[in-house]
Image (cartoon, rainbow, N blue to C red; front, side):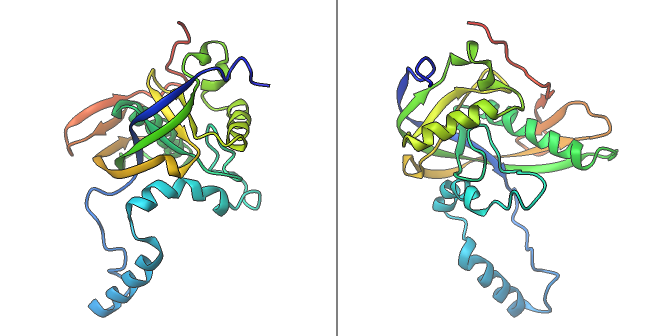
Length: 241
């Protein structure tokens, strides 16, 4: 079925960067729910019993999405990704470099903001946490295949890549390396948590975007200092050799 597509593998042993939601400075989410310190302590103890932020949770959380999804009981399946329908299994995504993680996450966050706050005239700010994790294993390489199989980097239609991901996951593959649909960088889509280890913080980012202006998305690594402006066009890459 995929004999021409699945021809290359790579023995991968490098760190991947994953860009997720996260706060630069932790906030007390229970400070308005009680009258004294004892109330706060009880609330924090209850929360931390099942949600302690550990290396394990940074690696395992994407693999839990399939089990927790409420689709089709809700209107949209927000957990669908390029190589997973978001229902039967989850995928851990990472990039080889920081710029690619920025392009990937900025594209999706900008679309969310425009859909949620289309008439907002002030800046909307989001804080991001970039973690790094070691990935070791034999991965299927799709790099260069996007020239013939354009659907691998389709901006929004994941039909082809979802079917491919499902096939590879059923075959017990560790994951794939593939070209980003948002820039010329390289991503990894990992199907097995056992291939990941040594999760740690890499940096924090701040995204700033004005929906009504619908211009560049400002990215800061140091607060108040421009790192990069992102113009999220539907497709930024050129499919040439």
